[in-house]
Amino acid sequence: MKVLVQKFGGSSVADLECMKKVRAKVLDAVAQGYKVVVVLSARAGQTNKLVEMAYQWSDEPNPAEYDALLATGEQESIALFSMLLNDAGVKARSMVGYQVPVLTDNSYGSARIISIEAGHFLSELERFDVVVMAGFQGYSMENRITTLGRGGSDTSAVAIAAALSAEIGTVDCHIYTDVDGVYTTDPRMVPKATKIPKISYDEMLEMASMGAKVLQIRSVEFAKKYKVPVWVRSTFTNDEGTLVTQEDESMMESVMVSGVAFDKDQVRITILGVPDQPGVSAALFAPLADHEILVDMIVQKASREGITDMTYTVSHKDLKRALVYTEKVAEEIGAQGIEYDDQVAKVSVIGVGMRNHSGVAAIAFSALHKANINILMISTSEIKISCLIHANELEKAVRTLHTTFGLDGE
Ligand code: ADP
Ligand code: ASP
Ligand code: MG
View 1 (tube, rainbow, N blue to C red):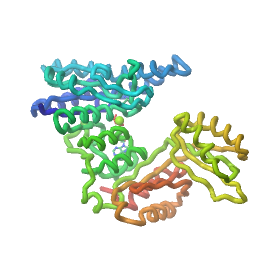
View 2: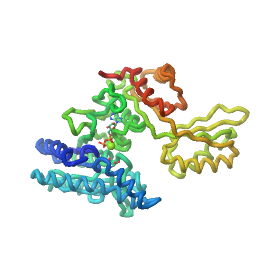
View 3: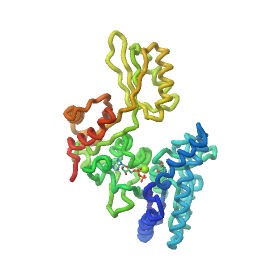
View 4: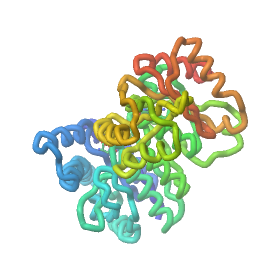
């Protein structure tokens, strides 16, 4: 059996007209002899509406019911789209997460997929030409509906491709969206961004982790782990798109920097006048970890007379809770106080070429300096350099780095 997974995001299934364009893509694959797994997101804006509704009904929505509510967005899409296929004479059926079944852990709102039963799915593919599967959702061991975190339909698509690959050999996964591939940076911010024909899993992972929301991070982790070839394409053009795949020699040698990513969802918290002694960092960060608050960057100032400042960043949604736990510890360890700044953003340059080229950081810092942009914090990995800067300088910083590393197109 020849199987193809095609995933369509919210803007691709926004209305009847868009869904008809999606249908044309699916019919194309059917005509090529594929059994097609179509993974759909909720229609554009629908998930946001459901989130809003949950908070109108409840100050603190029950997490399991919150997921049950959010999952309805995808259920609507798959039912409507299956009707369209049926009308075109295609044998198709819809499937929500627990019908597949997609088993997850019970971290409501950001559940992780544990397993997908491919055998059952394959028998449905024997009976139908197209199975239309709801993205973004699964069910937990406790038999409750779960969702996979915003953008999670990408992960559903790659995960079903991986599960089917294990049974029948490599199944490609095509992620259709509103841009025709992965670009050197978000083309909505930098019109001169250029499309990357082929990108390694590691680079894509860093791009996604550093804020490029074109693919959900976990979808790239899955693709890398199970070696699923992922194509990012546009629903609205016939362009080939970008292939996300294993790193090869040519990728490492060609360029130092492949892309620039940015993340506006950063808040900087500083604990002032911290006694510089063993155990202080552990005391500060353990409660944050215990409460699943993700800390991104951390910097400790050089200490003077045994006193120092500690700074870290979290996302906006965790700010309130982070302040509560940090204030408590700050008092216990006798710190002088805490302050925060939510007008910050992170800009990152990414490239596997950094493994072979030194001096990328120096070039990035000096470019930002020339543009008169102050760097507040820095973090690096083998293939990435990130700088925290003032939010109002973000666009200038992205454009500056994009130009500096020769990424501008026409
Ligand atoms: P979908 O609803 O199809 O899942 P998303 O909005 O989640 O689509 O992702 C597509 C968007 O990702 C694009 O519209 C683009 O603005 C944004 N994006 C951010 N960084 C990049 C990048 N490097 N390349 C392409 N798109 C990017
Ligand atoms: N509908 C969900 C969201 O808006 C999942 C997705 O689109 O991938 O985040
Ligand atoms: Mg998305």
